[in-house]
Length: 301
Image 1 (cartoon, rainbow, N blue to C red):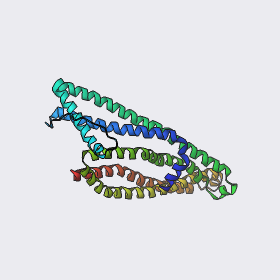
Image 2: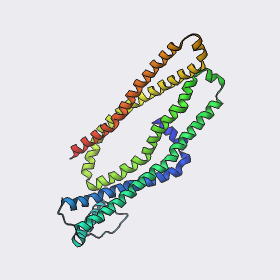
Image 3: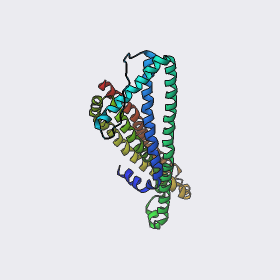
Image 4: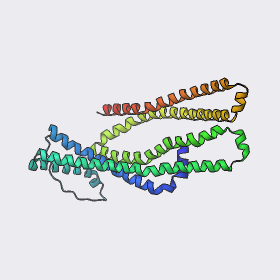
């Protein structure tokens, strides 16, 4: 987390303009997602006649400084929306209403995925720009280092850091940066929607969340530790390749090809096993989060 915040402070500020647009599009995407979900409910009511509840139109007076007005707004909007749908069913018929709701659902979904795409679109210059800046800084640092540094450090390890570690930043830390701007917005808007539906169930969900968070955190710590070991082993492999290329004449002069090949294959096998463990833990994250989420919903129900 400290490394992530340090990279955030050093390399992200030049791209503030894209960050602002990313936040705007994420907010719009979350709101449109809730709206699309709300449109599905009356469609199901029309198709399967789930509810026979009647609604009456209620006048809405906006009072920005009244807590009671803000508290009653979600229920009032829901009531008036369902009244509008039921009134259209009575006057225009169920088939016509279903067509109108379907058109609205298609349009809202199109706008939702469009804003979602624009959120990803505005994040791309940040990701590629930060990676470019990191590579430039590493290369600048390499050219400024004294010659004595390169006699003590393996060149292959340096190459691995310039290539592998920077790519790791792009795939992991910058993905976390994407989630940093997206997830808090989604959580906030969905939380408002959950509280509007039932604050009691929302409170119960929050009671169960720490357990799920603890399990996912334990998996994340193990994944981070194995990823660090994998990076070290990758640097060691690159060093062996660099040493082999640099000393190829000596290796052939002493007929040491078999020994060098055996050493590389053992290191490569170790790297393969570490990579297997890393990928297995990565693939465990989604099924576990889905299972814990389903278990939480089942307990709430």
